[in-house]
Amino acid sequence: MADHSPTGPVELGAKMDYAEHDRTYTGFLMLAKYGSLFCAAVLLAMAFGFFAGGFFSGFVLFVLILAVGAFILR
Figure 1: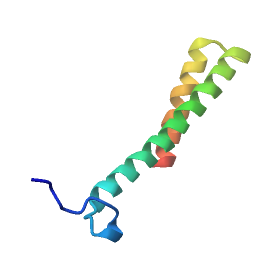
Figure 2: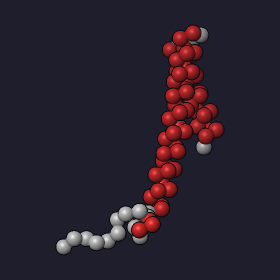
Figure 3: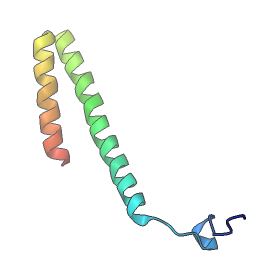
């Protein structure tokens, strides 16, 4: 037989899993924060390595930016 349990929006009686919503939102925020940090660190390190230093100095700056940024964002 057909299942007649409510599956629509909460206004119609469907049950919501709020713990899963909170975990998903927290995961999205972490991905957005640390993804933005990673992109900014890559761009700054590449610019520094190209204009001022070389590969090694750019890599050191990249690691330094990631470490300081992770400390600030936690």
